Image (cartoon, rainbow, N blue to C red; front, side, top):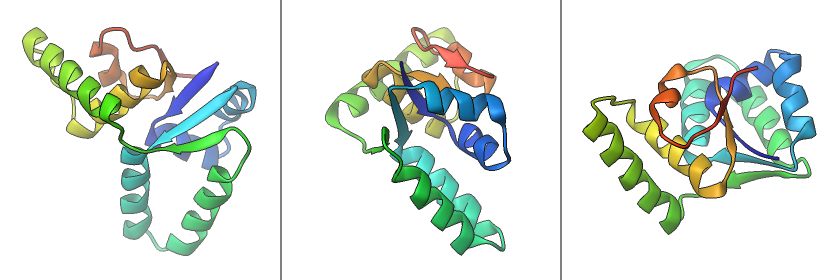
Length: 129
């Protein structure tokens, strides 16, 4: 199974959420979209423990089976389709979430997130342990 992590799922791991940790350990591949990396760094900068948080994230990304997922042409095109469908259906979601959903869809991943906005994205499988 392939999974894609939302920022709140990564944060849950850091807070000791055993259910999310188990999903990561069971997955064949774990993707952290570049958009999520940006959200996490922004959050780290707002806090008092930037260096510790950055080091923990780097250790996480160095684990076997975990990859940082850059924005590819496929993800960018998928973003366009997802955004158009959300607009047509009258179900907008935050811009970063569209990018995250596009990354999960393009890689055939299940998205681990506690954010119900993603349920508006057709074809996306969201896991909320």
